[in-house]
Image (cartoon, rainbow, N blue to C red; front, side, top):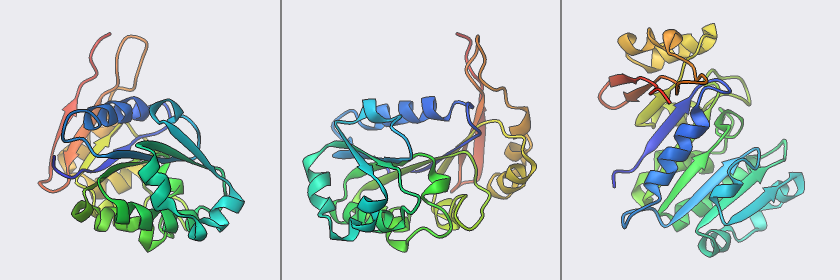
Length: 222
């Protein structure tokens, strides 16, 4: 299986979560599936996809450097780390190092603009820059890629991603950033993509960031 560096981009309610779960289900089945699924999120929405749920509050994040995270990852095939701390950087650094040591995993970062942001630790961003050498797949799910000090996606994530799934966006700053990320013929179609409705799934763009080629996937009627 080719190592994935994926981005799913779109506003709240656009269909990101449904698509992400479909991708994860497909990747975690079959003989070539990664040995473990590691989900990092700011809520418990992935709880039904894992067999272990670890809350990382402010105290746990502060002490993260002293925890044997390798043992946690080795013990559970599917684990959710729910971040309830306003300061996830100590945990992010520690879990990034553990992921790289253990390897052979699919790492899902939901609400990634709060975690894999421009100030995220290099040890965490190494999942994108060096994870393929350790058999680590990465999937970042985000509402926004525009950057501020501690929100928005790190350029390390954007520059090292291989595939983007992009749902309808209309916010001007997001469209400007998407225009830098996607080929013009794909970027110009993003505002006109169909959102999810009672009788249809949403449209979205699938873009190969290595070749600069993309297609629009039309939501099928229910």
